[in-house]
Image: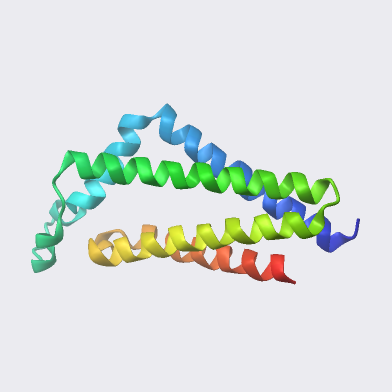
Length: 154
């Protein structure tokens, strides 16, 4: 095994573990995680002192059902990411490098889609106004997923 393959295994396994920990965290603190999603979709950060009046507040989603569906979808995608990364890791470790790289590429593609959707959500729900650290995190995660795509292709 060369160093580049070892690096691909470490990155793939690490993202798999990270994704599965996210799923565990969502399930272990379902109410708290759901509340975070609901607060984001309600755009409550704009109401924090001092309140920021914005016509964008019309975009707020108050529906508990939609909050729950969004949270469940996020958790399912994290679970799918975990599964894709784990399968990729198993293939890579077992010497089936082509299959492992294919699975890892799909995982990083899905991760890129998730973080891009999160960035779109940041824009739609005016996250840049008060939740700029969250938006920077989503940008960093998208960049990391894109680097993963490049790494798996190289």
